[in-house]
Length: 100
Image (cartoon, rainbow, N blue to C red; front, side):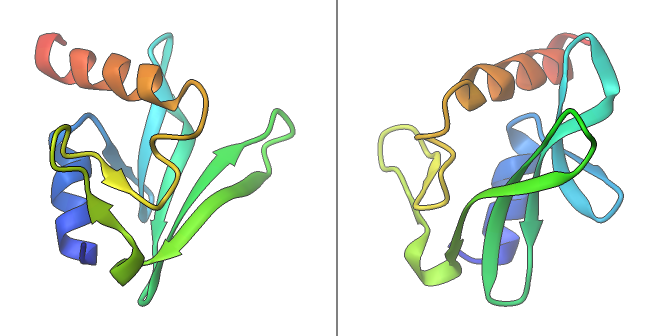
């Protein structure tokens, strides 16, 4: 996947642009990003904010290593499927986008 394809997928699936990054927030605190996807020139990283406020990189991959799952459409190779709790957070943000 390319940077533009990842951006399009993320925006269609509940991610919002906050600052310069695609972000997910808690449903109870919609203005407070807790997960962000940092899209650089050659790599994409997923970062989670620690309680101290510091961002911690938990996964990353170069764009050629990121592929779309043929069944679900979720990008594989960047950790979106393997990070525990992230699927639920994405679903909550998607629901808020559709019903909010």
